[in-house]
Length: 154
Image (cartoon, rainbow, N blue to C red):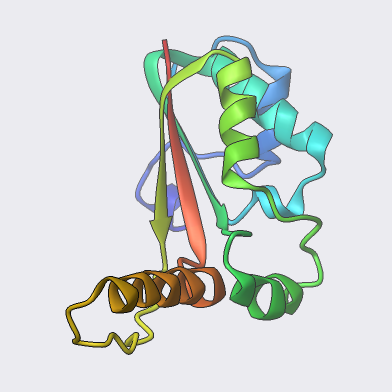
């Protein structure tokens, strides 16, 4: 309603279907935030394929979703919304994008927690190894809750 009130050309419809049903919209970019975790694998593939067909050369696709590589998302973020269908691993999504022709793919982790990791201030090899293991544990438990993957059509 706000876009329409400002005379912007907008449509309210199913984006996956819209991209799937068209083949040359000449879009500069497609952005999806917190959507793909609500889609089944076929719908995700259709979204990617439709975006590729409708983006201009050099156009950007950005998909942002829950990060399954952090355990806290399995206990808190994902189960809170009963319409979530699946978590999508960033490496799986990157593979799908590459297979469909996207390039310059970048993964950016967001919603990062800062749990104030207790680091020991002793200079020894054992303590450095201990600190690295603690950092990895905190990242697995409390790391970035979301990620965005950015891909370019070439």
